[in-house]
Length: 417
Picture 1 (tube, one colour):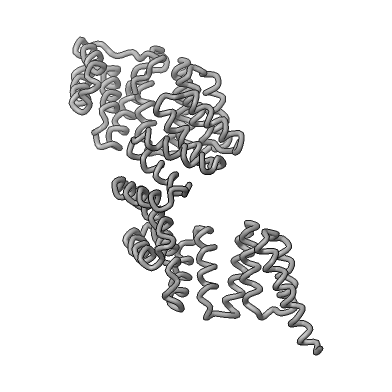
Picture 2 (picture 1 turned 60 degrees about the vertical axis):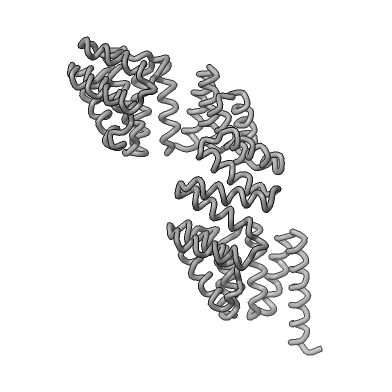
């Protein structure tokens, strides 16, 4: 046998072994086989392509991209290489580059219908919604076998755009087409949660977990729903399960902290908020949640400090401005109160919400009263009542004080915000 023939045969044998390893899930062995095959035959694009697939399974995306780049240099007319690279680029969040590869692949083979779905997701992630909808429509028409996947992707885009009815219609269709799809169930649960359909959301998340108990995000989402339903022990159980699986997930500590606080476990809540902040020092929510516990403990200066830390993370957080304004306007401790700062914060909160949030007008009224401007306090209180008549009894109590030229002093165990 000629040396060249022997080299070709050896490369083919290694290539075949690599394929077998890839199919059996032995990805390190697949990489080794394809690497040895490439050494023998460095100008065969398939070796690089399939080694890239093995690298992907090992989470080595940069190595996969390098191999696909080399494969494309060898076979620039192969649409599947561009399609593979587009998928990796999408996972790398390089959406424009992924779109360009989808365009090249579809230019070479317009029949690659799934690429319309991928390109649609890239367009959606890049904020090009109309292009995304157009691609999803083509994918649905040309690739009905994967219709449920495209419906889910379109439902997620509708959800992002807050078109909840359209999102729910797509999610319902996806579940109807594939009732065992955990992705469809979880997506529909997220839509129900956004629509405040808490019972339906819980049902979808529960079914998702029955189908796949390892779906951590579904369990965390169910904990959030149960928190809203005031079923704190169940919310705590879900959070505990999430934390056992992913102990570094700050959101789980935030939710468990809220469940503990509402259950009366203040020390446990505080510990969870400490841990959430340690895991994610950039979290606006964790600082505000911890400030709420400090407020309840009458540790007003600590609460103020946490709210100020929250503002560093989001200088346009109306809720944080409002909380600061409330403390400075109503704290029982005269050394804490500061009417000027309270009014500045409350005014900023109202500006950020276009003067349409009754609770923020309530805070502004309290700030004016702290400054002795009872006429303005009563004016803002009346506007708050007009915006939220369901809170009139509570607001009237403060309005009566302002009309009697008296300020309001907050109750640290019951923050009305």
